[in-house]
Length: 91
Image (cartoon, rainbow, N blue to C red; front, side, top):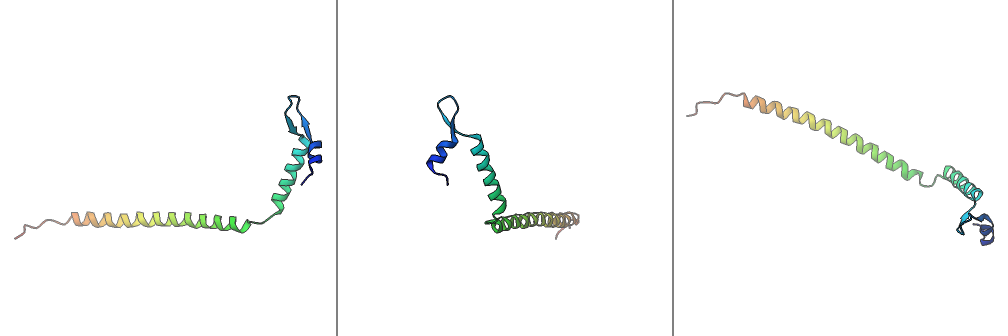
């Protein structure tokens, strides 16, 4: 972390009396964040497990939807066959 003096040297006034960080400080800071982001792999396993769980959930939803459609077709077929049975005269 930079000292207070170093930060004061990097801060420039924009003419309105409001002090803003200089552009070079912002670029170097963003560059260091980007380099750190690409090199660190802490938490990578958690993301992989989350993606895997999402993929498994998606496959399960699709499979259950297809099975439900098939079961609905079977019961619709049974209903139409039962409805086609002629009614008896009853005794």
